[in-house]
Length: 297
Image 1 (spheres, one colour):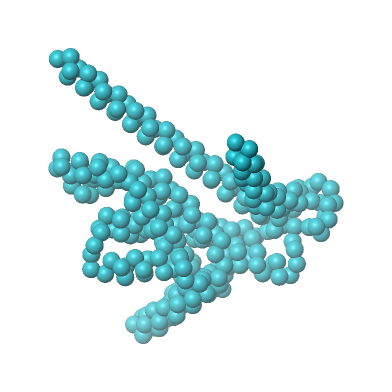
Image 2: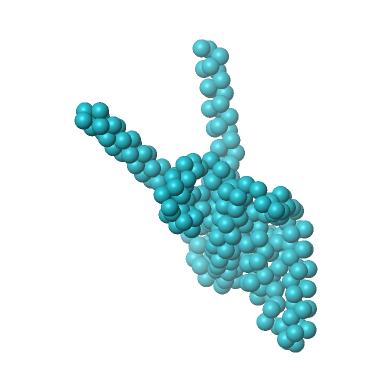
């Protein structure tokens, strides 16, 4: 009993230290975003002037808007492709080239970002050269939003495929098999039964893709062009010149947005889990009542 109590206290202490290691720097960053001093490491009093300056900083706002658009669009595309790839890998057990397909899907996840960015750049250069030979002027195909979108969608798809495949692997297939026995077509089974069951995983994958896209710097550095600097690029360029209080403000806003999304996501998943448990309990109750009525009759 004493050993269990010691182990319990040890686990609680380790949990506390881990959470403190993760969140104390974020708390300090949020506090210093309200610092009046330009020196980010010296407290000069409470002030919100850096928030006002950030809201008037066109360079950061344009970069943030570009990063957000790329993150949403690339995550949507990666979610659709990742869901299809995960479904194929989980439901079609054996097909010609399945091992190669699984390896190619997961390759961007384990490959260094430098290699992924360089390979995407070389591919885009080859495509631009080919288009130049066909259309002549290819200035409209320069590096920018579309090229960054391709790189981020490729990266995010690998992670989303893993999430969807894992959810489908643990999903009970009896409902799908029962629907097939009742004459439902595979497409209807997917949209009516499978898709609602894996929707929490799809939403999680989409949010993961948004986070990866907003955080990426290496691949974006290879694929971006003039006038298409994303938020990580702007932050990295400013940090090299010294710490700027506006970066604390920007990080605080990002933390608030991400925290809100995480809370909403957790609430949605808990609500879905509670609803499924209620439906399962109601179905079990109805089945029990039917059996009791059959016995009485």
